Amino acid sequence: MILRTRVESERNLEKVLRQGFGLSSRMITELRKEGMIFVDGKVRHTNYMVKKGSEVHVKLDFERNTYPTEAMDIEVIYEDEGLLVINKDPYRSVHPTSGVPDGTLLNGVGHYAKMKGEDYKIRFVHRLDRDTSGVLIIAKNKFIHHKLSEQFINRSPEKIYLALVQGIPPKEFRVEGKIGKEEGEIRRKFFPGGQDSLTEFTRLWSQDNYSLVECRPITGRTHQLRLHLAHKGHVILGDELYGYVGDIKRQLLHCVEMSIDHPISGEKIHFHADLKEDMREFMEKKHE
Image 1 (tube, rainbow, N blue to C red):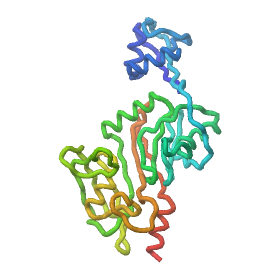
Image 2: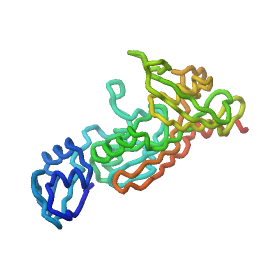
Image 3: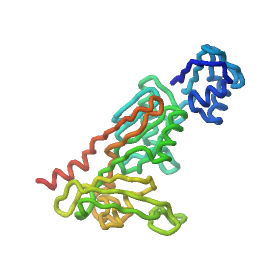
Image 4: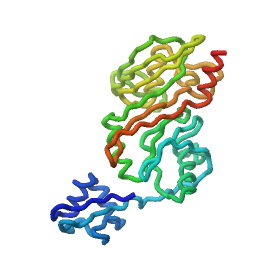
């Protein structure tokens, strides 16, 4: 991916990079060390004075994937030179860990990129739990990752999840409060020293004491939706950590919609991920 601009008046190159592209000091330093900053086709130092009419361009795709690749099904929702958006499957960890060294989504995306003749460091802009499915955004370089991470920090992306839960909640309700976890624990809970959290919910479907709930998280805390629904007595099906007892093997939670501002064009773009088969089948069987 290449960023380009034509300079309208004589300026210091570093100012062009900061003001014209919005690059951070750290990123400028890395690009300079890698020799990825050009003026009229020649590599230049950041203290170079750029003449009026000169073209400045920056190559961003200098980092490479260092993880083993592995063939797996990847459902692509959207892709361009800086972004890859997929409909994540359940039962799939996002990133390798000591306990899960391979078979992760990172390994699969690496293979997908390789088959397209691409090689880039895979950066997940946000995370989904191993068992949660749906929209997942991947940045193909550090610049895109930085720009999108800023949006998530500022809570500007619009996210909608669908959850199959126990019981029949009100048609519309909201849950808010301070949540966090004790040291050494995974499960989140409400307590005064936690972080603010807020989710708005709408019940979309009910049958046999089960419901499909639309979840709109206003904040983005870890396990927020799982805790909020369990707190109201409507635990997500399959979510044993928050009290589910039964034979469903994963929490039936799916990120169905997400909207962001494109980090290059600024245009609002919208992603939709079709519901996974296990959630569709559950509701279909209840209609039989």
